[in-house]
Image (tube, rainbow, N blue to C red; front, side):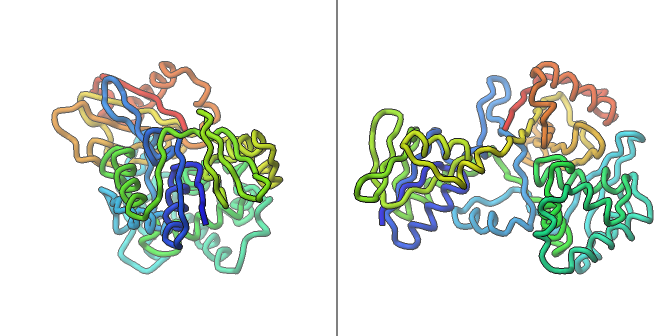
Length: 383
């Protein structure tokens, strides 16, 4: 069978490899000059290559781990257990926390006991969450907001704001009021409670394009997949024979027995409509609202973060990463720190200079080292 995959992001590459492994003739069309989709880097005239976001993942992302192993892309940082620095923005207290080498969920004991802003009651509240997650499927919670579900399980505002919200918003990229409780339950169960390895953080050791494109391209070529970069699909049509034809923006045509649209739902809808096709499920997905991610990259004359991975609950800073330390590119500077803001419905509309100034002021008021650092350059990327 001849199959055309439209879209060279992680889903498209994974799909093309799977199809080729099963003996199909596969062509992959990607409009960008590289594979990886949104997992990519852009060229900054001052700082060089800058990632579109701080793309980290957890040990619980087993399907992603298998895909990366398939193409031969390995993370630079591969924690055995969750470890991070949590900073209380009100008091300035920072604590370096790490999971214990104990069976789940006991591995989280030192994390919960040491978390700024949480007291001994947090243990009992977390136990209620775990108890509720031990009983079967949670599909019935799909229409329940995550915040309402957490409150119904006796979670105080302190533990919601300091613990559950930072993890869930970054994982689901949506505010708790709009997040499905079924999805939240899955994230907590798989990402934190399933095993000590589940919450361990993985970080690429280089920019995303260099990390993903060469090994993905090599794996596709070795599997016999035809890769067409800078090939923008314009429409998908159905022929009288029942086969499909993909029309590109230059007027070229590619025939296929099957087409896989590994794109955003809105783009998939447009491709089908341009070819006179309508798929109700695609149309329904295309009506879903976007949820942006905004990343602020700061380049300073000295490092100022108290650790390589820093969480600032109850603050617009959310998650921060010392990219110079994580990439092992210390040198003489400049030193690169990245702020990753999920569900950034407000930040997406703020002008770049204003957002940079706002985030830098927050850094200076939150981290003592930032008040002594000089901001040399900054860049905002949006997803």
